[in-house]
Amino acid sequence: MECIRKATAADASRIAEILVFTKRMNYRHIFQDDKGSFGELQVLPLAQSYLADPKKLEHIWVYDDEIVKGMIHIEQDWIEELYVDHFFHHAGIGAKLIEFAIRKYRVRYLWVLEKNHGAIRFYQSHGFSQTQERRLQEGTTEWLIKMERLLPI
Image 1 (cartoon, one colour):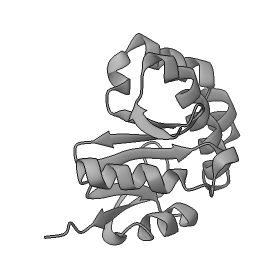
Image 2 (cartoon, rainbow, N blue to C red):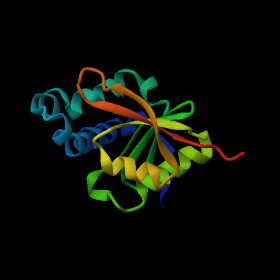
Image 3 (cartoon, rainbow, N blue to C red):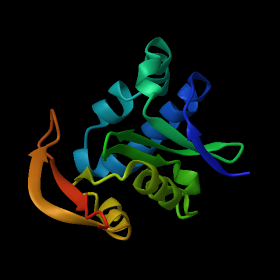
């Protein structure tokens, strides 16, 4: 049975695993920073940070069909993070997570790396459009672009 549910402390290691490996797969070619990708970005410390501060999980939802395959972090009316385990890409999980966020939280915007063309296309297919607003990804020389979704009247 597939479902989207609120993340719990029991999901900490799986969420950390999805985040770490998906970020490595998607961002290594953009940032070209192996020290960051393989040194600083580690599953165990990230999972421990969720366990040490369970409030970090309050705004995270997981896609769970007996295996947690994806996660979405929603803050008020924006998507902070959306990641699907690489092994389950193109299975509609990201679409279900984003549609959940749109329906339940009426999300209006998100920030995405300008060079992450696959993510930009994905968000566009779900009604988000690029704006002219840009900002640097903290601690890097890479640009984030803001994408907005117009709400139905």
